[in-house]
Image: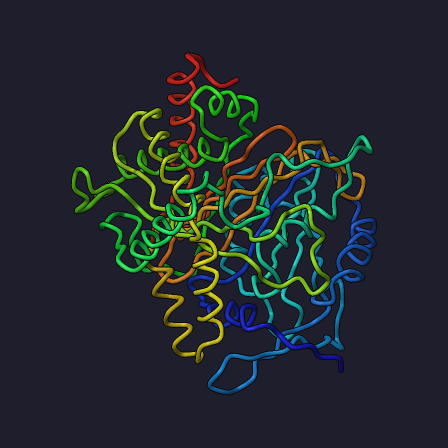
Amino acid sequence: MVAREMSPQDSLWLELDRPSNLMVITSLLWTATPIDPDRLRALLRERLLARYPVFRQRPVLHDGVLRSGSWVDDDDFDLDRHLVVGTVPAPGDQAALQAFVGAQRGTPLDLAHPLWRVHLLQGYRGGSALVQRYHHAMADGVRLTQVMLGLLDPVDGEDVTLSARVGRRSPVTPLPEPAGSGMSLLRTLGSLVKIALWSNPDSVLDGRPGVAKSVAWTEQVPLDALSRMAHATGTTVNDVCTTLVAGAVSRYLDDAPLGRRSMRPGDDDLAWMVPVNLQAADREPPPELGNHFALVLAVLPHGPAGFRERLAEVHRRMVRIRQSWEPVLTYGMAWGIARSPSVLGTAASRFMADKAVGVLTNVPGPREPMAIAGARVEGTVAWAPCSGHQGLTVCIFSYGGGVTFGFGTDDAVLPDPDLLVAALGAELAAAEHAVLGSAVG
């Protein structure tokens, strides 16, 4: 039986698992034509099992005050346990697929075997849907996205370019000298104060998560339209997408019964956990995968506002984070938490998680059309796990010249993610009209 040591960061994700919030990253893609199960099995053997040992290994946590564990080869490994072939539940439409994915988000993986499962569902829009679930203990979201994209091949045989760059050569965007270092330090100190003192105002986003989960996603938004809005306002596509999410949540809070509860005018800021990659995404993930990322606390404006006004404020706040050492600071905090006694580390992680209403991720996929096992991929979206009392996870996923917004919710907190999709559509229409004077098309 071959074993290798598990890093404290990886074992922490196992400890944070709760029935109400599983530490599992879920992704979905769908294809124009059916995926052949035998070709997919061969692909998984070649590009997962042969490259990354953790896909054949199960976790073992060791007893003790300090956190420790191992990855151990699964002597009973069976690929058919991890690749499940079926059909999309009747009537085979997007609502049925959403219900299936939502149910999977509330279903734990088997700790007695490697912590991943892929569902190949035939009969979705004339093709297939592929639901992939990987435990966060295996790797962080960026590396697992690289693993997922590693299953794809370009349709036209060209080099693959990402819709945007993930990660940075330096964890902080430098400011001009001589004031640059001092300003970065001041902004980092401001980040430390924000992390220590922040508390969200009451809203419908508060609650005690349960086991049942739901998902919904938008149709693809043309990336060119988002780029035009960014260019016209001197911001970035990431700023535009983040603002659209903030505006959509604001609309949801306005329409939901008791949506804002005790939120007062001028007290409409809500904090989100935003993953930040600390390595360039064009680097091949290491064979052992693992976690190497930071979570920053991004406070976004969710009060009533026009799109341009909200975008300017989002841009200002995101620049402050990018021009600080907050990602390094929070990575250091996570490193310390992972190496602290288990009871203290788990409590500290949940304390930090409860400062945010949810998780907001931005995943840039390939610009070019891709195929998996010979079937052209029509679209893709993913959801990072929530932790603590969080009941909302949002993913902005770029692929093939379009952007899909995915909402993952907890049924006890936000049982209606389709309302968030509708709110995003209304916010998008208002944004394009405000910036470009036309509707998205």
